[in-house]
Length: 125
Length: 362
Image (cartoon, rainbow over the protein chains, first blue to last red):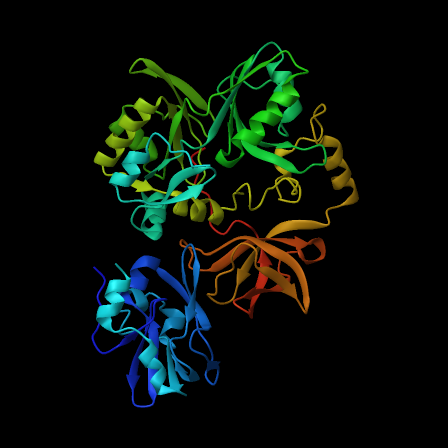
């Protein structure tokens, strides 16, 4: 059974954001990595790229298929998880511990449009 | 139209397979994990349900003459028990299908065709057959078929199914009478590994499947069938061969015998060969890990010079590689090209289509 973590914000397209101050760490949920199977490549944005809530910012790929990554928040990318360049499988090992991008949030209130852990669990049923 | 189910459908469901539509059938794409299934075939053995494949029996006084007329390879003088790979072509040289021809007797041939093309192929074969003294029978619904693939296959065939096959050479077959029926067993496959394909009644195939699974053979699905065949450069109809792609463009000229008597499409291919190809399927290896997939553009400078036909991050080598149809001026080995992947251009270089060495037992 896929796990969720209290205190994170979730999207229906299976991304999460963990908010720390004015920054958000964005990744894919445990449910998403389970559905994908072995992650073999993560197409990441570049630092200084602008991302917009509801728009794609990259892709996560299994052997068979590429799935777009949809940003749950808007802002500017300040860091990407460089470990994923050589070890995309980290997402399978620990989806919530393996964020993909760190975003300086342009509108922190956007997270109010996202789901709580409990609501997200219902949405995966 | 609902998709058909093979005689092993219930087994797939019981094993928890993820099912997808493929070639008009509901087929398993993976049981547990494509990577594990792929590696089982490369290192030990795995069993595939390939009952969706089509079978057409051609018999009669002019059976050989007819097969020669519709098939690109040359079966003249072949001994019974021999198998040939080749294509059926349109007059313009485009490919109707790629197939195996099993020579059962001088007047009897067994054609194994792709699931997605069964209706198209059989209609086409029937139309061509009118001018010959032959009878064609579509036996696709009669036969179940499993493929046991991997270096341990010969041992598993003997120990688990009681089918001794050390006498079978690569690309030959034999018939075996067992459990009140006659099986067809061939040393063939679609993975680049040693292995066998067994054709039998639905009941026999269901029983054999259960025995193999109980014996610990890994059930393997279409997902890894594609990654395995791709790594050794084998074409898939729909990707590397289509109604619009000739075998010469696909790099399969060795299965086209332009020096044999007439066959459908021969004139077009002879002309294409004489004039020179304008495009060709090549291999491309990328510098990074981004994954080229079917339909992505191959780019040189600001010009699109081709299209990816199949691509993966190769499970056996870890490299991101693909087959692609490119304009002939970019088909030379070591030509630098780029592939557009998620809006970014990724650097690559033209290479051989064989990304992993075949391991056949010949």
